[in-house]
Length: 88
Image 1 (cartoon, one colour):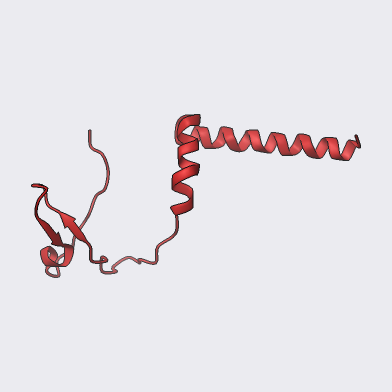
Image 2: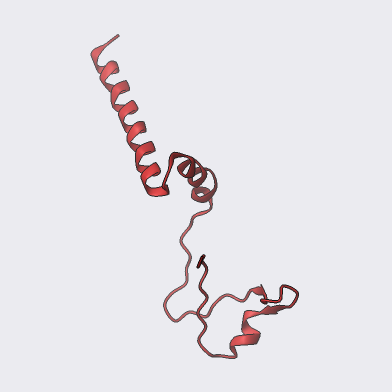
């Protein structure tokens, strides 16, 4: 085997290991890293909202779980902050 090919294969292997370790550190564990690559990365994109832009209208479900409403019905021109996350 040529030395250049041997060193190239070693460099690619080291790069792949570094990527796997980096994703595992970012995601929390190797299992979470696989989930992140499999589900999150293909859907990630940058939006085009700017500071001061109107929120896109969407239909939300109220806390009772049965009533649905549009964001614009509730805001009536007032500022609105939506927080998506887990507070457990």
